[in-house]
Image (tube, rainbow, N blue to C red; front, side, top):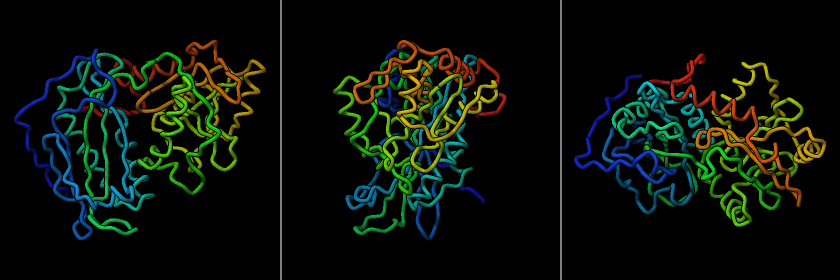
Length: 356
């Protein structure tokens, strides 16, 4: 399809850029944003880059009342050679469109979506930090902007992309985190929104996450909402366990997010000849493996956290200290391999990076 040229309106006043050492996560935003609009009779139109600022939303905008919105998250890295690279942007766009389909939101043209991200990062490339462990977090969003009250899909939408220079997602960095198995609340069930990256999923997880933090845990591990025994995922990442030399991760069945980093890690494991299985695994199986001395490592995978080692898993009064609370050798190897590709230190055999 023929795409409209991207209009560019440069900011006349630029923000002060933070030092790499000052970066947290998601608190600082760059000078520009990308926007495009959708009308039922026109499709997506008017792609543009503008100075970062508030969105023009009517108080009756459908997203504010019925939560019709999707988003995604990916990263751009400044390599050791100075080159800025996006990591697997096409896969994130594909996932965002799958989320949009589930939420009755019009799909983005993949070429337009990729162009929007590349051009925006190129515009604000001076914001991309250079220290290993830092990056630009890219947040594309589609929201229902039509002003009306009533339960139906909206007829108008806004697509926008913002950028945020970031450091580590968890304050622990690569130090092992403490996770509590959640039994009181439910995140997702078959046929629901578990596989879609939409705000409703995250809002539903907040109470459990806050209660866990008050108890000294970083996050919760969700169980399947019906069976209440099979592990699904952590609130901000997919989960993998290594038992008896075999890596096991819950299969994609509609209740967990199809993580891009999860897919990458499974590919790496198979490239290395390490057995990796996608299947249902109960929390009781994990506990039994721990008691038998066969639970070797547990780690989470996700764009924000990359690889996050789990040092403690709490379930029904049992606190499983995994690998003595230390980072496991496979977890460290995976982290080093991913970071090596992202920062251009290692070859990229699967062509997962896109230069900006």
